[in-house]
Length: 211
Image 1 (cartoon, rainbow, N blue to C red):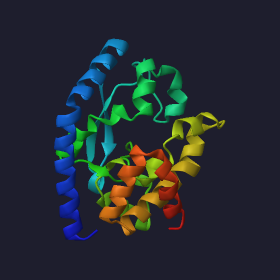
Image 2: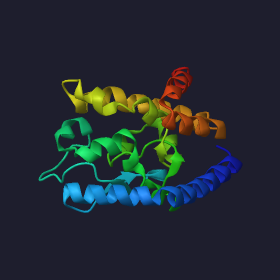
Image 3: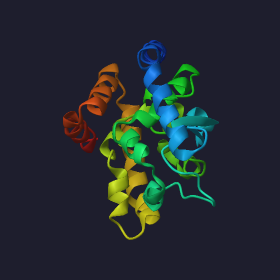
Image 4: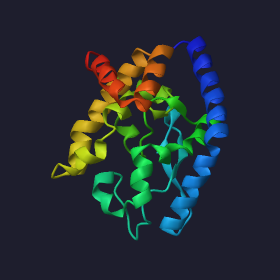
C-alpha cells in the first residue's frame, strides 16, 4: 500500500464511520438495549485483540452470548449453547459489529482489513506473514467473507480448536497476506459489496484462490 493509498483509505474510513453512525446510531442503541435486557448485563462486549503493528486494543461488539461462569474458548463453535436468541439474529446480519465503527473512528480499525486476532495468534506469524501486522484490522475483509459461516463449519468437526488452528487460521493468513500484497481501493469496495451482497462473495473467493 502506497502512502497515497493509505491516506485515501483512512479518509474514507473516517467519512464512512461518521455517516454510518449518524444513519444507524439508533439501530446500535436498539441492539444494545435488547442485548442488555436479554443478557441482564451491559449490552456491549469488549475483548482484547491485537491490532496494527502488534499493538493490543479493545474491540467492541454487541453482546450476543450469556456471561460465562468460567473461562471461555475463543472458538465460538464450542460456546454455541450460550448464544442468545437476539444474538443469533445480530450475528446473522452482522449487527453485533456496529460498535466497531467507534474503533474505526479512533484509528484502531478500518472498514476493510484482516480481522483482529486474540492475543497469541499474532505471535505465530512468521516471515512475510508478519507484513499483515502493518495493516489496520478490519470490520470485514476477504478472509472473514470466505469464512462467514465459520461457526457452522467448526460445529461440524470433532475438534473445532484443532481444525481452526491447522486449517482455517493458516488459510486466513494466506488470504490476508494476499490482500496486503494486492491492495487497491477497488478491492476494498468489492469486499464491502460482498459483505452486503453474499452472492458476490464467490467472485471475491475465486480472486483470492488464484493468489
